[in-house]
Image (cartoon, rainbow, N blue to C red; front, side, top):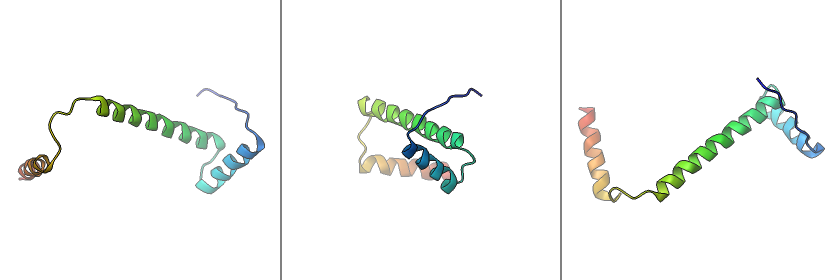
Length: 78
């Protein structure tokens, strides 16, 4: 695992230390790794949402769509 040193103003260091103790992290590194993972997930979700918004709809999502979806689910369950 690589090492990275960061400098924080005292106010942010205090905040990180509080989060570590209050949220059950073993170290500040664990806390920062979790923040980075969450940011990666957020960016991935944003990319997927933007790609979906830019795509051409295949069929309308209306009552008929959901009725057909329920029928397919019932058939799969049998």
